[in-house]
Image (cartoon, rainbow, N blue to C red; front, side, top):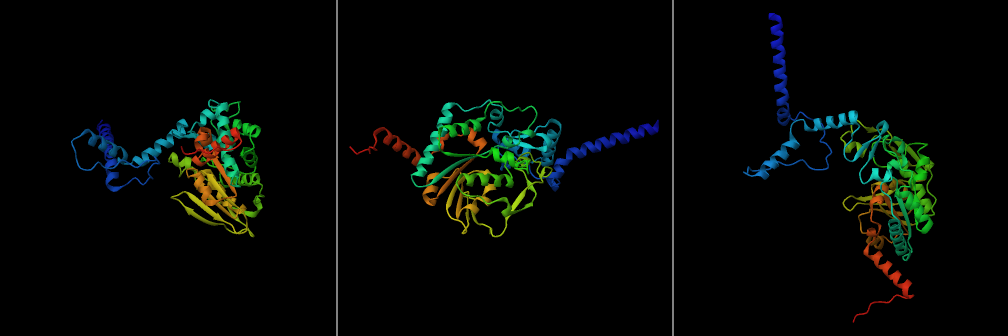
Length: 388
């Protein structure tokens, strides 16, 4: 009896000690910095300490926000929470969708609604796209500049087989299908649909990252070949590059703080073979532009694009003497006036395209040129406004 009582006391003592240790763990972490787990990717800065004491509700709220963001072992606990939600419930957060075999998809910006056919273009939407692109094409043509429109496909457009089983694609054409069909029937603007080429190429090797929203460098190479071919230029063949693998962390894995356990094993880096020489490249991260120079070629291209065009930069420069890559947020007409290119490539990722207001993309100079052209069409000559 005495032995059982002794064991019970020891057991109770261990429980008490363990309980006290757990209570004090956050404080010990705060003092000795025991949690070496990286801070979670929350796209915001942690709440700062509110400063001098004040008797106010706002001060107490600021204190509460500070302790919520800085309590001991928070980084590790957040990561464990995300990991077990992925494993147990296949839940990857508000913008990331977990697919099959470890594939991740970006589910924001109406991805599900477009894929399932809940959102579709109306005839007026397609007419607006036609008007916007023809306005831009005509404005550039008046300056002797060629124009190409490119929509970089969403990941689910090329790799639907790894989506969750519950997500079923509509039998009707999605927005990009509607747009491509409408433009080919009703307009002469060059619109490059990269999906067929990427779907064929993925039979040879992956064209998109498993844990990233973007295509990989091989997918970028496939896109490059189709784009410059549409411009009437012979692209460099795959044989002119050597390929080597390098590890990579996917942006979607970073979004859910699983970058260290969801490493990308398939990231091909392309190096030019002789007689190709490495491109001269300059960058300005603040103004978001990259310029490549290739004395072996002729012609100048201006590229308006987004993060999807990053994978094309190492290739497009081999088809032109000079290429300037600008983010879409730049002033398009000012860039054209400054660069005086021979070709403008207008690239937009599918999810942005699905939600864009096409006429809102036009700059004032383009809108003015459109009004002037309409006036010529009505009167045969442009009537200038005169001062009274």
